[in-house]
Length: 421
Picture: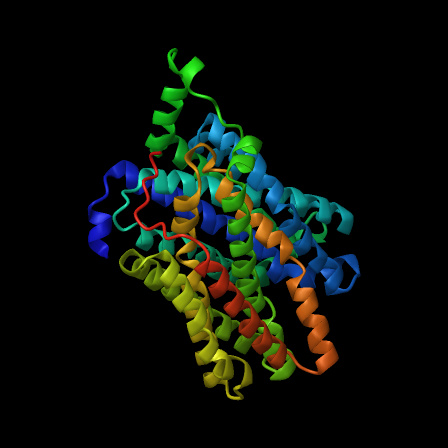
């Protein structure tokens, strides 16, 4: 697959790099809060669960961003919308460093969620309208796993920088977690890279030229966002159900796994972090592997295969007792789960109508995310009731993986779809 990169021209490389980095740094900014929950709770004298509500606000407002930034990208172009999007989430991230109350943090994380929700759809539209259709599956897997890269970078930044910030003073105050949010403003620099190196999607330029040509003004109807959603409602509803399954599988296997290791197996923070690194490496490799595989076997069959292959991993993933067995089980589980996810960027882009391609997939993605945004709360309460996280995680995988496979079976194959129409 390295030959796929060699076949790209400089404009295609820059477009893909911008979209990959935009998604990675977006995830980096999201996970900084995850690592700082306990520290923020200590500063505001509240329980960690109160700070964790900020994560819910981020997830809940992501569909708003998918709609707003997607509409901007469909009307004014992918490139300026992506630049505005990255600037916004960087500014809101920086503002979190100066928040003085928990409610202020909720507000800023909701605004961050709007910006975060817009990045994926706009970036995917720019990438897949610029890249050649050959190797689209491979690029899909690589692009999606930018989220995993962001998680790993956030973990590394927290491990390396937070101990220094925890002892650093500024005007009589400990910098602590606020320093992490200042670091989170770094993605704003990506705006300059996009401005100087990235060109507009050729597909959007061509479509915009047709729509604005004098002869097209009276013969070619313009499709607004809401009109486009109504026009393609069956496809839109299918994508929402599909992304509900995907988000439930991803969050249902990842979000509480560290808690499972600490509560059920009494692992230290160091061991928990080490296992997290292992299963994120598995996620990265799985996304690239199955994304590339979808180019040969098709999007549908690859998603279904990866989802169902997660089922045999349940005993090792949820019911093992040793460190190495649990790490191996988590690696294999995320290899399959994120392997299925690796097909998502290409599949959603190929199924989305051209006039609303920046809005359609991102909004469906984030609405699925909204539907499952209380997933971790439900799992935690079930674990408290039934006395452990292992069985809850196992049942989650069993139900959601089967649901995802069934929903995918009802979709149509899209491999090699022409994105110029």
